[in-house]
Amino acid sequence: MSARGREFLDAWVASHLPDETGGNPIAASDLADQMMKAAGEAGIAPSELHEEVGSVFEVIFEAMARRRDG
Image 1 (cartoon, rainbow, N blue to C red):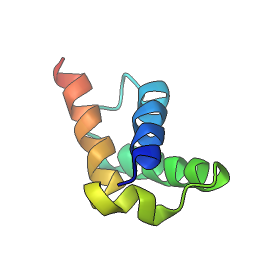
Image 2: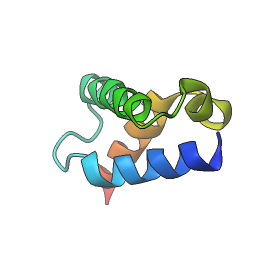
Image 3: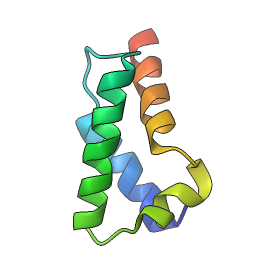
């Protein structure tokens, strides 16, 4: 993942991750779709996001689980 892609992903997750959906794969999938759309609108290619993390869905799902578990 490029530094620009990683910074975008981290900032997007920090500001868009809901408090009440921890562990919900459907919510994580929806958020991953929203994040990819926002990244595209910001001029960040999917390849910049997938190079290092592989799956944006998994990053978001794990972040949701961590937030739920405190």
